[in-house]
Length: 157
Image 1 (cartoon, rainbow, N blue to C red):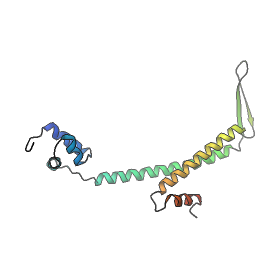
Image 2: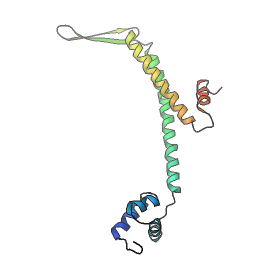
Image 3: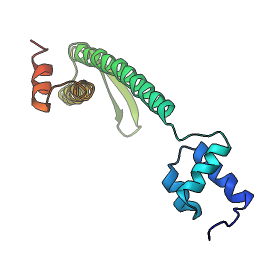
């Protein structure tokens, strides 16, 4: 209805939608008012639909996450080295059993085969995740997927 007054409740809801970062058209549809009405309310309240601050905040968050992934990538390699060292270290084997459910342990020169297998699988998974994270963060370069993979595999040489 042209010229109909909008209740203060609807105006407050529209203001809340603008403040929450909703788009002008979405707010208009949600409250069954015209886009011009939403624009007028925004102007009257000194609000804007400028999202440059949102864009800057998003870019900062992306950058922060990339830094966090870099730390994880480095930590994964440390973990891989630690697990590789365990492959050649003395290993404590234990058993709980017998009629009295007795605990026994023994130190052996190197891990048994099942422990070696578990270590090697864990190393492989961590290395795979390391490479995937490296490729993910290189995706913003001009490489295509194969070139990026090749660059990682050849250490950029």
